[in-house]
Amino acid sequence: MDYKENFEIKSLTSFKIGGTIARIYFPENVEEFIQAIEKEPDAFVAGNLSNVLVSSDGYDGAVILTKKMDNIDFDGNKVIAGAGVRGTKLSKLALENDLSGLEFMIAFPGSVGGEVFMNAGAHGQMIADVLKSAKVYCPQTGIITLSNSDMEFSYRTSICQRKPYSVLEAEFELTETSQDKIQEKMNENLSFRQNKQPSLTLPNCGSTFRNPEGDSAGRLLDEAGVKGLKIGGAHVWENHANFIINDGNATSLDILELMYEMYSRVKEKFNVELKPEVRYLGGKNEKEAELCKILYQK
Image (cartoon, rainbow, N blue to C red; front, side, top):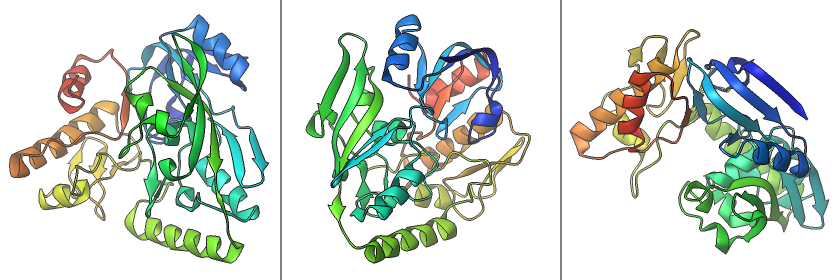
């Protein structure tokens, strides 16, 4: 198995931020994942770090990245994909197989494991609509298969966020549709993302905060006046108030302080406490720990 010590993670994160990881594993299949997690039961598990802010001070523990677990198998209108498969790649392959249901993944920076973990969605589609089952690792019982209902999906969440489950593989049940209709939907989604979200060439982690029930985090942040707000090497994107951009030299503390300012302004103006959509990995920086206690309420 690919394993590294004192690994510089910065180049692998979407934010292009992060220090040294003490131990990192890159399993290529379920068997290797089991070997790694049994050796490092407290490891932080992620896909390709598209939705994770890694501390500039690094992380003393172990990380398991599933990005090399990228098997894909089509069988009629069903597809089984490993946790490391990029959402964009899977949506394009579904198109080639005349299968609809994954159009929302086009241009998604994340991988299947993370998308199932958070019930990712966009443009009226979401993981919960098409997932048949997921193979996950449970520390108590090992590998288990969860049905769609077992996953307890709701907005941007699943049972995997409430229990120590790691998604290893997902089976999707799609709908046979003409390529023209699938491509049309993809084009609409791409056009929306190009107009409403920053390019993936700008270091960012997508939406910073989740939408509160019945409202939009972007609307609240916009009316709270955070667009263009800058701290250190990071700023809130001028075209949408729920995106933070790394201008090139931002630290994780810059990002967290900016998130805290955004959170505080919305709380003061609307008495709404926004919840981060970005995950955090760190623990060595006391100031970051203090901010995370407030932002993540734990």
